[in-house]
Image (cartoon, rainbow, N blue to C red; front, side, top):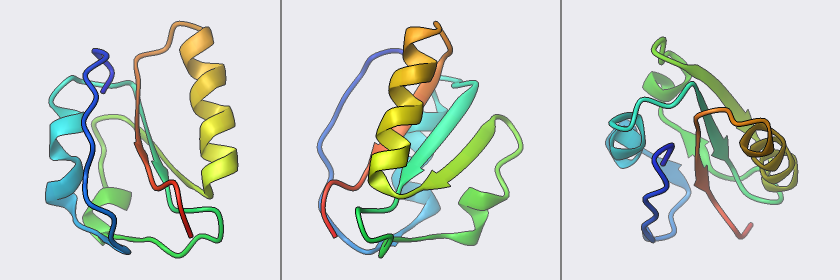
Length: 85
């Protein structure tokens, strides 16, 4: 989360809005959704429509790079990280 809280979640390929609500509770400026190395995770349409912060849906490597860049710049950023597939 943007406040530094971390938690592990089960791996699945359908990402529901409810799965990322806890990330939004910390009011990030940017939310990054990592959809796996091959891009197989399917985010709920409601995630794409979030208007309280910028949303980036990227393959895992690009998501990791953007997260590190934003974090280094001091941006309030949160990431849902799908580490496989």
